[in-house]
Image (cartoon, rainbow, N blue to C red; front, side):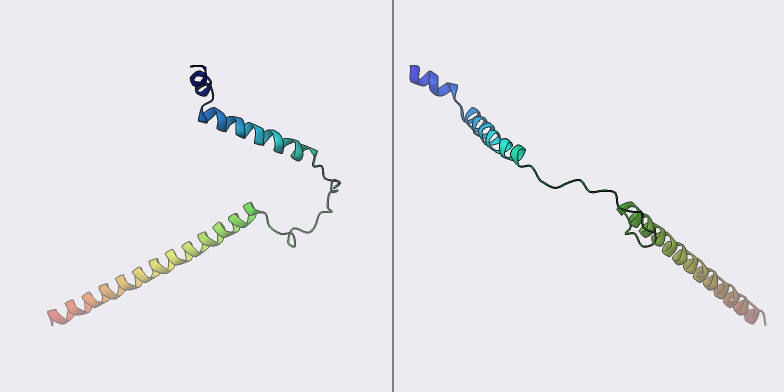
Amino acid sequence: MDNKIKSELISRRRALSLLGIATLGLTVPTTVLTVSDAEAQGTAPATAPSTAPLTGTERRQERRTRRVRRRVKRREARREGREERRELRRKGSEEKGSEEKK
């Protein structure tokens, strides 16, 4: 009966958690003890903004700006095309109407 009680005390879940804690206990000291001999870098002198590489935010903003410009151009081209087609339809219907009256 004592064997049954002892086996119930250590379940699979507890065994896996103990194994995880043991693994964590072995890896943490090695990462803490691993210290780099590198020194801190000093601040770099400021460069001209035109030659400096763009940050992610700046690149995204430029892409958005270019995209908006393209959209505006396409909208204007579509609008002009619609206006031209309207004029052609109106002129065509006026010519047909004048021919029918004669």
